[in-house]
Amino acid sequence: VQLVESGGGLAQPGGSLRLSCAASGFTFNTYHMSWYRQAPGTEREFVATIPPSGSFLNYKDSVKGRFTISRDNSKNMVYLQMNNLVPDDTAEYYCAARQPGSLSPNYWGRGTQVTVSS
Image 1 (cartoon, rainbow, N blue to C red):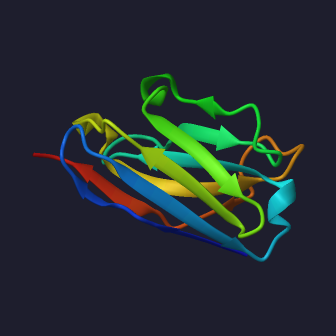
Image 2: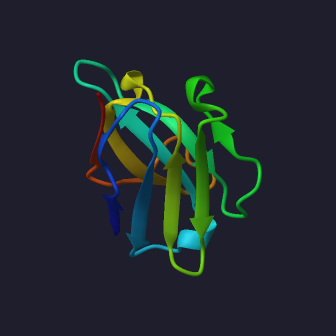
């Protein structure tokens, strides 16, 4: 199983980044896919999730209206479009896969760093 994130980097406040996660080694179109993040000195926190069907999206309150999660089951990819970035969005961002019925993610990526700074 592999989850490989990409697309992180440095962005200015108000800017945008698009994160991608390439999945392999499991039946992607049956898993809930999520993004989490962890800033230095803090616990990892939930950001967004998308079910296998791509409907009923769920977001952390502070990113609603700014971030959009999406998936392409034909390519085994999940994305996080991040707009209007703020410094508090600075964190390592992780892709995660959760099997239906599991309480927590079964698989994690290694993360991609997002830094928002002027």
